[in-house]
Image (cartoon, rainbow, N blue to C red; front, side):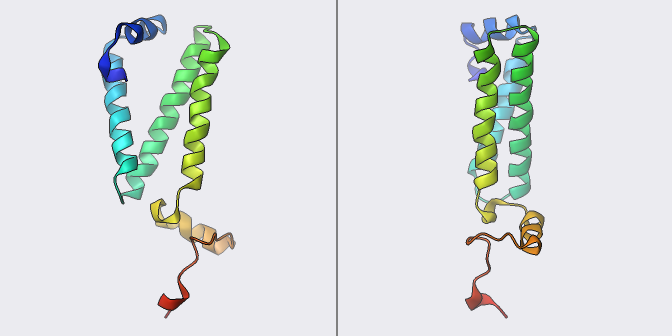
Length: 122
């Protein structure tokens, strides 16, 4: 949405005290983050995308709070962040970094999808 530079978005970002060109930077980063989450493989890139969305949404919430916007404008990014955290925590093991999968196996907290297939055991 930031890449569209609509009048409403321009007014909103100006009210927060940011320059208009920041919309292009944020819009490009968000678009690349979505692409990273949608393409198969590349779990490290997905970790960075989730981190980027976290920074963006926390920054959005803080920005609205600092200019004393209504509570709904401050809370909405945090609600979206809650969905992003849910997506991150519930993703299948095939989309996780291998080190995190191994740590869960060592801790004995495997889920059904994390357990190795006994047919392939050596």
